[in-house]
Length: 167
Image 1 (cartoon, rainbow, N blue to C red):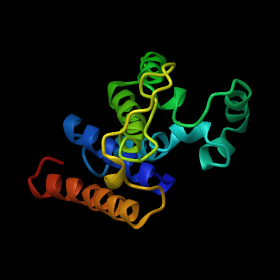
Image 2: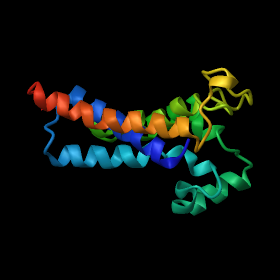
Image 3: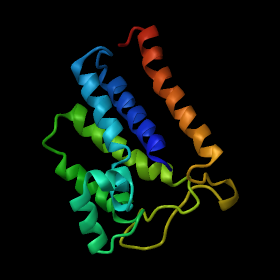
């Protein structure tokens, strides 16, 4: 999946956390959580040479390449998610869950791709949710449709909460 799809999924994850915590729509906490979600969603692609995240965090990306950590392995695994969760423990709960769930959205939606994800890394077997003929190819019209649906949901959730007076 492309960065825009992962970014939209990260924002949607952040909005869901904001909904659960009943954070007012027009607040600094909301702004921070949405920015964090937009950042954390595509972050797992730091292991993909040439990606925006790999360029942004070049030293870390170069280290992953040096250690021969390939795309959709370590940074997309349950093990890394657990380590990330432990590292994020000092954060306030709103930001802890925002970052963790936005980051987790990345390998989750990559499971819809034909290549799959090594969720149980260091076991090399990659997992995918859809059979090959239904899988969503990166950059395909199906991915654009999927991204569009995520963006619609990103608008729908806060509007729904505002309409029902929960924000």
